Length: 329
Image 1 (cartoon, helix red, strand yellow):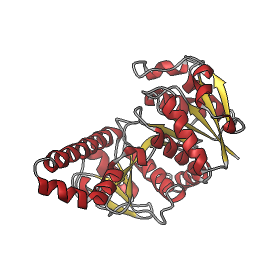
Image 2 (image 1 turned 180 degrees about the vertical axis):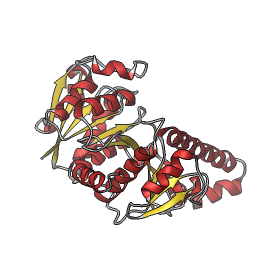
Image 3 (image 1 turned 180 degrees about the horizontal axis):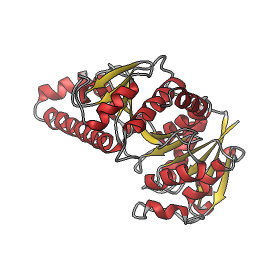
C-alpha cells in the first residue's frame, strides 16, 4: 500500500485545508495511507477516528514560513517540510506533498531525496488548460538560467511524465520560442533545437499560443520564461472572469443569457481553476514531489495527493533514467 508524506503545516491557511483534502482523497481511494507531519495538537481534532488506521502523525511545531530563505531549509531539521522529505528519503513514504514554501521543498527534495541518475537539474512542471485537454509545461520556476542540455533533459522528463502519469500515448514535444522556424529563438534555444531533434515526437519550435490550442502535449522552456508565462496566464484568466462578471450585471438580457449558459461558465471555471490540477510536480528527483499552491483548498490538496500517488505507482524514475542514458550526448 502506497504511503504519502504530507507537510501539514506549510499552507497559507494552516492545517485544516490540508487535512480536509486528505479526507476527500480517502473517500475516493481506499488504497493508500498518509503521514501528516505537523503539530499533533492542531491535527488530531481535525481527523475522524475512523481514519486512525490510515493516518500517522509525526509531531513537530517548526514550520518554514514563506518569508524564510529556501537555503535555511537544510538547517531546519525539525521543520515539517524537512521531516516529511526525510520520510521519503528513508523509504518510510513513497511520495511528498506540500503547500508550503516551494523553494524549501525544491531544495530539500533535490539535496535529500536526490536527483535521478543523469538528470542535471530537476524541473517544475505545470498543466495548462486547452479546449479539450491540457498541456504540460516545464520548467516554470526551478531553473532561471538553463543551457541547451538542460532543455533537452526537460523534454525527456516531460515526455516520460506525460506517458507514465498522464497516460498520453506518444506525447508530442515542442520547444517554446518566438517563432516556429528552426532559425528563431536565442542562442540557447537554437542549440537546444539541434539536441531535441534526436528525440522521438519532437515537433520543433512552438509559440506561446500553442500551449493553449492543443497542438502539443509537452512544452519545454527555461524557468524564467516559464514562470512569466504561468503568471501571465493566471492573470489573464482572472481578468477574463472579472470582465464576464462585470458585463453580466449590466442588463437583464445579459443576466438571462448567463442563466442559460451556466453550464458553459461552470466548465470554463473548472478549466482555469488551479485546484483542478492539484499542484506542480518537481520532475527529476528520485521520488514524487508535488508542490501545491500556498492558497490551496481541500480540492487542490486532494488532487495533489492523487498526482503523487499516480507518480509513485508508475515507472517514471526508471523511464527517465533510461531515456537520459539512451539520448546522452
